[in-house]
Image (cartoon, rainbow, N blue to C red; front, top):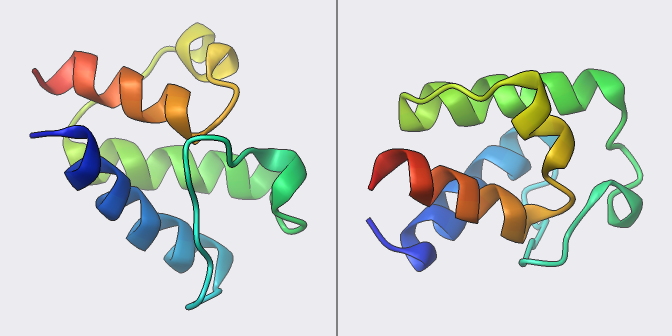
Amino acid sequence: MNREFVLEKLQEIFRDIFGEDDLVIDDSTDASTIDAWDSLTHINLFAAIQSEFSISFSITEIVDMKNVGDMIDSILKKIN
């Protein structure tokens, strides 16, 4: 699994969680760039990511992720 594949999967998850079919994310996307990204969507987002990739994150790992790029890096570490 490579970075591009993970980004594509995350794109689908973000669109589903935020209900925006035209939402486009990149490595720098974070909570400040998506108006609807609040604490509840944050929880739903990580639940969906963990389910999609069959992985789990600790609270510390989640808090340490500052943007989509960090998410991708963390996912790749866990699945490779």
